Image 1 (tube, rainbow, N blue to C red):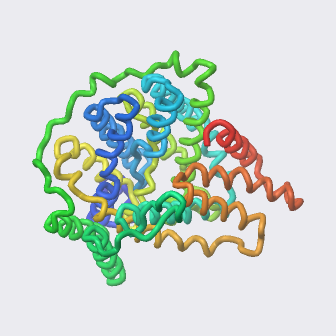
Image 2 (cartoon, helix red, strand yellow; image 1 turned 180 degrees about the vertical axis):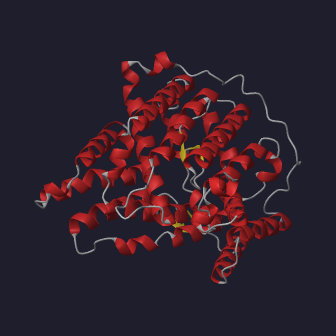
Image 3 (cartoon, one colour; image 1 turned 180 degrees about the horizontal axis):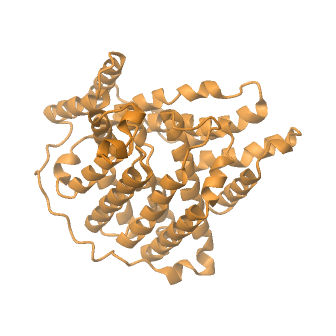
Length: 434
């Protein structure tokens, strides 16, 4: 079997060039986690240097598994929402150690692996109504757009007592360069230029560096620090105490819902779902994220899963696992080229997220606007995913309210058995986690 046959390039109607561009684009739009994630976890007491290495290695392992085993163009990396929960809530407010928190991550990863192998996660995913799958895709799009608007400075947080968000300083160099980059990307897409988003990132980054908005890289090559201080330091005994159960449950539900919703949302946009609205062999990408979570906890970092930024590579034409393989190798390369690869400023990758968010609105036409029991939970899913700045809250809102509206309208028979399980998990999330 040749590499071309292994990745099914001809069957998927794609090329090595297209997949490579898609992989590079995905990496560049999520490379910010190399710096941002360790900075957040430092609030929990995890050293930034070793944390950076753990982040990169877990992303490499998970994404490579996704490319070679699941053969999907999805990138896997430690989630930003979960690491903020660990840093600011579990260790900051509740006072637990980061070692105990990582113990919960490890247990969650093991449970996910077992549930995936026995087929439980695949069964639950197949029970999600098509309307919620559409809502997941659209909600991810609006969430990406909102993040992009913040990164570019077009939208900023409002002052206390005023509007929650407001228009940024549109005359500032950062916003102007971002808007120009956004315009360039849209024009290139309109002209059907292959690699439009990647070209836009490169040109906008160059403009930001020339204008002095983004600092020039302070080097090219750097050696990664040792992770000895955080490797295998998770505390299982502490994570299994009764008082820590609510944290363990929250970590479990957050990862379960985020990964499942992200996979379905991305797959819907990429056209991977079958005629029944299910992702064929979904257990494979789910197993990849479960194993990556276990590896991440061992290395010293938080829950990993499919990244919504994978949508940028999909929009560039990525269809096969080779897209993920390219992204994985770039993460490994980042261990030694961090100064250069992290020089891409938010004003360069922010516009990409806005464009992708716009393109991910298309599935909304598939919603049943004349059925309030379908429309209302989908609407709640979309708006809460975006307006709470938390994918999990929106997804669980949809999973919780969909069966409630059906029962209230006398349509109980339309609720799959598995959806009651997901609804119960969502309720527990709101009781203990949200």
